[in-house]
Amino acid sequence: MAINLASASTLLSSSILLLLFASSCSSTRFGLPASSGNVLKNGEVLGTEKFLSIGNYTFIMQKDCNLVLYENHDAIWDSNTPEMGNNCSLVLQSNGELQILSELGAPVWRTEIAGEYGKYALVLQPNGNVVVYGSPIWSTGTQTQSKTTYAPPRKTVSQNP
Ligand SMILES: *[C@@H]1O[C@H](CO)[C@@H](O)[C@H](O)[C@H]1NC(C)=O
Ligand SMILES: *[C@@H]1O[C@H](CO)[C@@H](O)[C@H](O)[C@H]1NC(C)=O
Image (cartoon, rainbow, N blue to C red):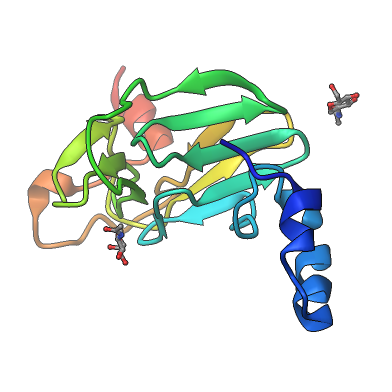
């Protein structure tokens, strides 16, 4: 599946392309375009064959629709969704829920854990763990939809005798 860096490089005749390629060589062990870094923010999409990477870890939305975390070339976690859609993409929703969507936009997989609407970031950590961060720290609780009022944990505790 992988095209290694050496064979891919021989295809490039332009020295400018070679320079660009060399600058991202640490992220090309799958023979793919450069890594999108190690953070995916909400609203951002990790498209088919796009990946996050740091150190020996690669978190990739594979062509087969499986989302896989590799340590070097060993898969250490996956979403178990191979062949469940075409051209799948990974999306971090603005409520912190992570979803794999098929080409048609149908959810193929989701974390089923959502929080308040806000800012979230998925981080592929240097220790090999993938974590979604971001939840409200404080709020006035004055939004018009009372259902979604957020009570800070400390306040909740102090209200319960
Ligand atoms: C990355 O993997 C290589 C090969 O297994 C290993 O030698 C190296 O120590 C690893 N690097 C880190 C930072 O764990
Ligand atoms: C895959 O999806 C992306 C984003 O929607 C689109 O740009 C691309 O053309 C699609 N590729 C294929 C092979 O359908």
